Image (cartoon, rainbow, N blue to C red; front, side, top):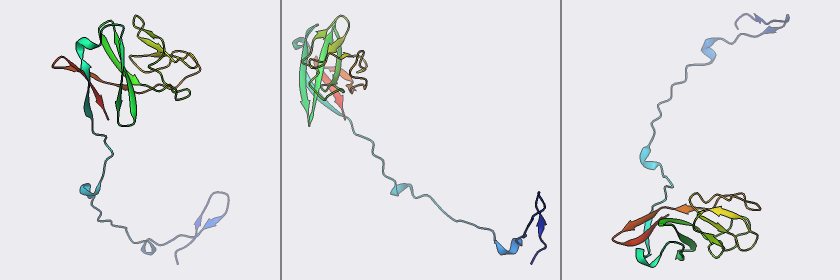
Length: 145
């Protein structure tokens, strides 16, 4: 056995010979084919012809188990999840201000920014999902995943 090595404070620690711990060589390769990624795949859904959603109007669309409110704010189109983050109540039914681009939850009055989905007033404090709006062939479409 190797000689003890002094440690600060007067104690001693036994030295372990290098031969007791042979070098560790790992021959590992990453198998990229075994990796899976949960990347959602986007889908494009049709809402309506552009001329059927005039400034100041809104429309509710369903996709799978999700309802989405589509709003025309002075010619700019925005789409948000039709669910108040405060109590899961319907959001698109609330008062819509097309000048400020906001919608007010009809249950408890939280005001949501249609551009970002962020609540501007309490009691809600968590944003709702927003969806990209696409105009193609004079048709309003949404990108959903």
